[in-house]
Image (cartoon, rainbow, N blue to C red):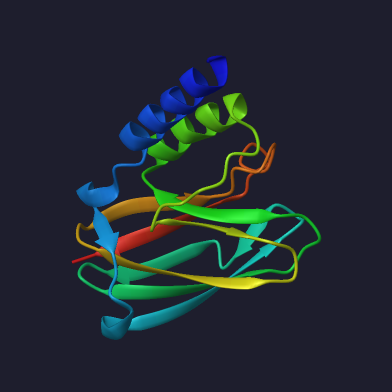
Length: 144
């Protein structure tokens, strides 16, 4: 019973923290306007760490894990990512299954297709234990 309660709590928190329709939505792979390669490394850094995209663009993020540790890329506002980091401390090992997030095993590459619908500053981060806290976070500037 405790396991079920924990699962429902995690889903409720994830749903509130990860409601991404406020700045974007899952992109249509047939309507990609730009492809961006993002590399992740065991130095707890993304490359590039800063991106600029246009509002309305549908971006294909090609995310490669160049390290020996598992990494991930979760897109959101900095406020949402900070809240998500706290939740992930409570639920270590939880995997993401949202269109704005991707878990990538060492030596592998995966893609995320996302359309940014609002201008502003957004971020992406890794929530493997200790990675976000070690600075594994990047910035996305969305312009009009």
